[in-house]
Image (cartoon, rainbow, N blue to C red; front, side, top):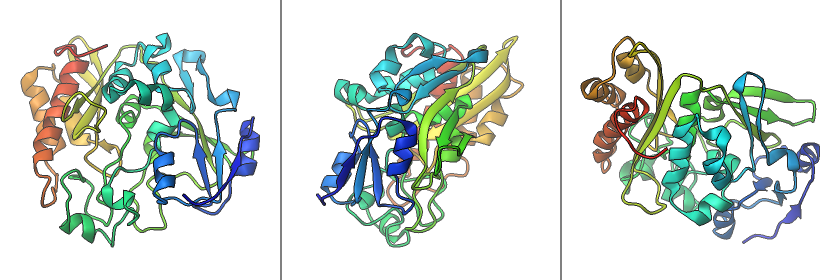
Length: 330
């Protein structure tokens, strides 16, 4: 591990003063479940590590006007799992429950989970996000890599288990920096991007910006669920996942959003799957058709064609679960 300085600010404004505008010079730490391993392997080599746990404003869950729920970036996952304000959002709780590790749930934070770095073994081996222009992933062991959005050099999959649910729900991110007066609210979907070269990260935050809160819109009347296809019941990452948010009136789907996880470099919004659902009553056949639509444009790599079927199943099961036609937690 490379030596670094350590800062422990106590306010959001103090955090911003600790951040360098140069990418890679500063890293943020809260639970540390992801960053510590990256530091030990020297995948990241910052000059300074900034601890966020002493900033009280980042560790709160509040209900705002209009039924909006604001969650601070350092709120731990176990708190969210049990919090009454999260009851209308089973898709989030199901994603957290799927982590299935008390240690990771108690130590991991919302901000850290959403912005965690890719699990791609080429990246974790220090070969970068685009791994020799994508050749390593294209020609090497790519069994867990992307089947959608993988036409460029980046072929990893977005690591967050909660992000698909947040995107499906229409959640918003509060981002501040580089100055204290700089504050913006953006859809969570816009936090993610597919890097085109090694100079870009997988998120859109500048080096001197900070994600402070996630704001959940009122879920009144919005059925939602997450479904993950996993190896087993351990804390391993899913092979494919999907989140669905549906507004059903008179038994008919009026609004729908379907987002796939762990199949693309970003949480993958499937417009074809949503269009398949709108104006129809949910049943197994319709959910299956939506799953087919979600993977119709998949371009699997040499060793991961199996993920196409898993993604289709994840979409189908998430839709049925959201509609109350399949049970499965919360």
